[in-house]
Image (cartoon, rainbow, N blue to C red; front, side):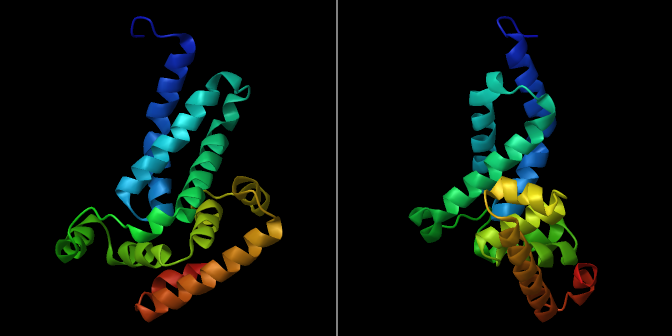
Length: 177
């Protein structure tokens, strides 16, 4: 333990180190931009750091961070400047070539289709199928009704199917039916 570090600080540092990459990947699925994902991850962990002393149930930390992450994402997409400005990791003429090297064509097509969904549908699908949350837990994370989660998931899956079929990635959608 570094000198002057309290037990609470050590626990937070260990949790942050263990979960940072998972939270960042989830943030990327939500927003489709690694730089923005870093910002969202930082926001979620900052909110956790502020409330660290108040957390009684250490088993609920993942849920708390997930809720902070999703709500930070949804708040960001409502901001006017996010709608006007889109950052990219690579210049547009080389982004496709760099992206192709990072994953299979199916994963790239799926990520591109996911980015075309409205933010709320994307958040529902990430919570339901990437985070493997049930309808009630997803509704709690998003702060909405269970019926909203069901309808957003149905619309999001239908739109993903359309986008992937149009892109020739029908094999990916077979698991979604």
